[in-house]
Image 1 (cartoon, rainbow, N blue to C red):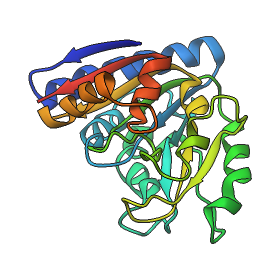
Image 2: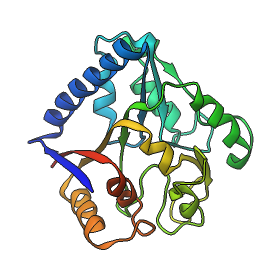
Image 3: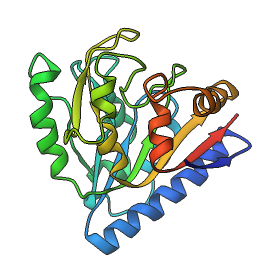
Image 4: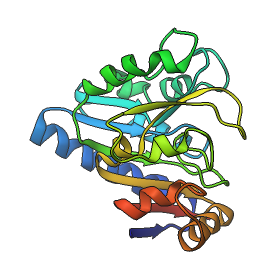
Amino acid sequence: MALTTLSFESPDALTNAFAEDLVSILETGIKTRGRASLVVSGGRTPLALFKQLSNTDLPWDKVDITLADERWVSEDHEASNTSLVKNNLIQNKAAAARFVELRSDVEDANDGINLAERHLASMSQPFDALILGMGEDGHTASLFPCSEQVKDGLDMSSGRTCIAVQPTTAPHQRISLTLPALLNSRHIFLHLTGEKKKQVLLDAIDNATEAQKPITAVVNRAPVTLMWAP
């Protein structure tokens, strides 16, 4: 396990430092490989970060952005991560970035996996940066504890980049990157705010199996930087 914790006095301080780090990572990717790739999570925690990045000077036309997971809902649905990213990150100066879709128009996520994997294969890999969140149940991306699909999602030998997930503790069918796909990243960040989330993480690391708290599967297998503020 290699968890590095960077603590900040406030969410604003975290956002400022995090944005600087990500810009540096993406600039390096562009300079060394011609393009850079960024994988992000949905939810409210990264919104301030997204908005700050969107106004940052960067050759965004050379950046590919995708999601760690997506709810299988239309883009105009309030739960759509695609909409959240397009409306908050791929705006302003970052509007030139290329968004790589996970979701397609098929009715069932199981039928969209192959297309999502083809889309992801078009990105520069390993991904330059991955930003994960974590739920209070210890899930990350859409790898939910003890769901029927979590074993497949955590299987390092499956050869799959994506799985379809039907969580029993959250609404909407989803598509999620698998653990090996998530770990195929040069820099992995866990972005959390609040004492409660930090304690969930520490308890998971100390006391839970990977199936019980899938975030531990990430921390157990790769260097992860925790970006945290109260």
